Image (tube, rainbow over all chains, first blue to last red; front, side, top):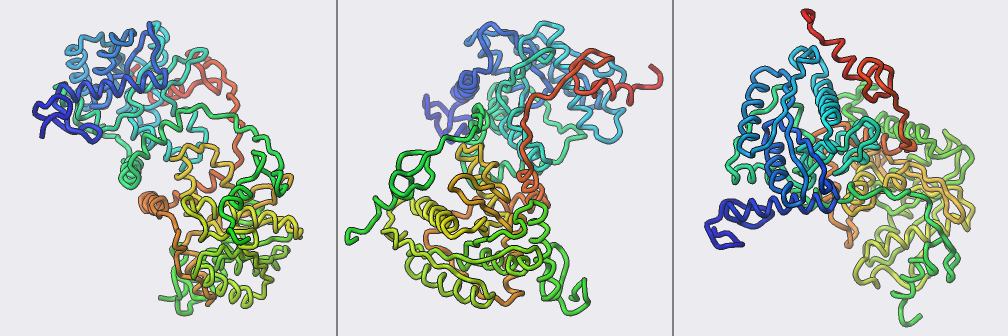
Length: 290
Length: 290
C-alpha cells in the first residue's frame, strides 16, 4: 500500500485513505486545525492549559496543539492531576512527564492529596467524585495562573456517549454543555475540546505515527463502555452519523420561537409560505386528465 | 407455561411476564390507559379521530381506544386515507373496513385521488409527499368534522427512530414535536399518540391476542429500517433506554434559564448551594491523620 499523497510506503489509513507516517501526521493535525477554526475554539494570543492524563487522547491533543500553537498563535502548557489511584496514577504521571518533555511543553503537576484526600479513599460514586475533583482543580488552577482556556481531550465518541447517557438519565439540557467551546463566566474558565470531531482510533493512529508514549492501561475504576459501543454501532449502520450529529450539536440553538405562519392562498390551511406544501404537491402531480 | 395472573395456560409474554390471552389483553390496555393518563393525552368528553392504516400498530391503537373510550369517557371514530399505492392501498382498505366493523367503530374513508393525484403519481421524494398528504388531509378532515384530537399509531420505536433521524439531519427542535400530546392552535387540530410507550412487538402480540386482522405487508415505498434497528440495538444493550428516554422527552422543557449561582463559603468557588461539591467531598473523604 502506498501513501495517496506522496507515494511513499503507507503507514495507516486515515478517514478512508492510506498515508505514510508524515502525511498522516499532516492530515491529522490539519483536521484538528479545521475543527479549531470552524468552531473558533482557540483565539490568537490565548494562553491554553491542556489537561494531560497520559492516555492516547490527551497525548494526541497536546501534541497537535503544540504544533498548531505556532501556526495559529497561542500558548500551550499542560497540567497533570495526580488523583492518587494507586499504580495507575503513578504510571500516568511517568508517561505524562515523558510526553511533556518530548514535546517541550511546560507541565504543572497538582496532587489531589494536597486537598486532603485521594480517589483511593473514596467509597461508592468514585467516578462522580473524581470528575468533580478534576473539574474543580483544573478550573481553579487555570484561573489562579492566568490561563484563558482549559483544553480537554474529549473525543467524538466521548461526547456522543455522554449525549446518550444524558438523554437516558433525563438531562435534556446536555446539548449546551457538549459544545466545542464553552465560554467562561465569573470564576469559571473557558473550556475547549480540540478533539471534538476526532475519533479514538484516529487519535491512536496519530500518536503511534508520532512515536509518542502513551498509557495503554484502563483506569481501574473505568465505567462501562456500553454507551461508546452504541456510538460505534450507530456509526457502523449510518456512516457519517457521528460527525453530522456533532456539527448539529455545535450549532447555536435558535430560539425555537414560534415561527410566523400564514394561510395558504389556495386552500386556506396554515403554512409558512404563500402556498402550502400540499397544494404545491397537488399542482405538481395532478393528473393531466383532471 | 402458566399465566402469572390467573394460572391458566399462557398465551405470550408481555413486559417480561407470561399471561393468558385475556390477562394479556387486560395488561396491554392497562398500559395504554396509564400512558393516556400520565401524559393527559385524551380528556373526558373529547371526540377523537384515529388514523387507521390496517397495520398492527393502528389496529392495536383503535382496539384499545375503543375499550378505553368507555372507561375514560371520550368518543372514537376512525379514518382511512386511500393514498392510491396500488395493491397495497386496496389491501389496507379491506383490512381497515373489517377491523372497524369488528370493533363497531365508524370509519371515514377519504381518497387522496379526490385532490387530484395519488402517491403512485409521485416521482422522487415519495415518503415526504405522502407524509405531507396524510397530515394535511387528516388535519383538515378532523377540523371540518368537529373532532377535538387526531390519534396516530406511532409506537415507541417510531418516535425514537424519528428522534435519531432528526438529530442526524440537524433538526434539533425535534423534541418539541415528539410529545405524546401536541396541543392544537389556530387551524391545527390537537394530535395524540396513545401508543407512545408501546413497542411494535407489544402491539403485535395484543392484536394477535384480540384475534383482529391486520395487514402484514410493508408499503412498497417503505424507507430503510436502519434507524429502527439502531433503536432495537440500544435497547438490547441498555434495557429500559426506550421508555426512559421517551419519558424524558415528554417532560416540559424547563426554560434552561441560567441557574442562580453563589460562592462556596469554604473555598469561594462557584456553586449552587452554600458549600460546593468539592469541599463536601473533601470533608467526607479527608484522611483522619490530616
